[in-house]
Amino acid sequence: MPTSTTLRNVAQKRTMERMAQPMSTFPQFHLGDRLRKARESAGYYNAVDFAPLVDISRDTLRKYERNEVRPRRHVLIAWAELCGVTYDALVGGDDGGGAIIDLNGPLSSTLRDSGCIADWSVILPEAA
Image (tube, rainbow, N blue to C red; front, side, top):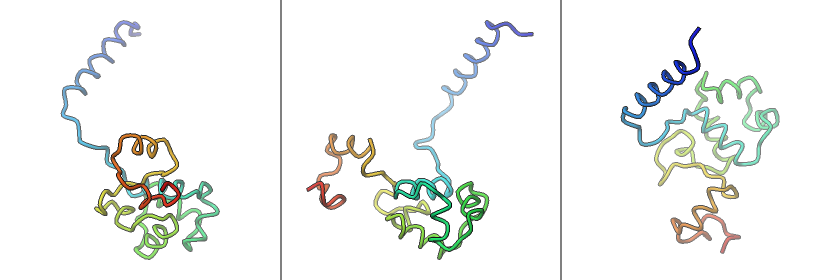
């Protein structure tokens, strides 16, 4: 049985190997990840309640969010409209940023404080 020192040395070696590899610029999110994040950011925390709104079953929704099955275009369009995001942002295209951000979450306050977004009234009318 390996000793704790041996296990620690192996873990350190693996960490050093990972650090030596070039890092990708950003993590790649699957469509299923974006679907779930958009749904939850829009306040639809319960998948059972959301599925009928886009005219699919609960099991189909789970398959979409697990990236097991790709949704048809009309489902993606309905999903984007219900969640308040663009179709392009949802499928991972470029819509001027492509990010799905919870405008009431911690990232929005970081963006406000940093001055990255000059006119918040365009995004959040109540922020004006």
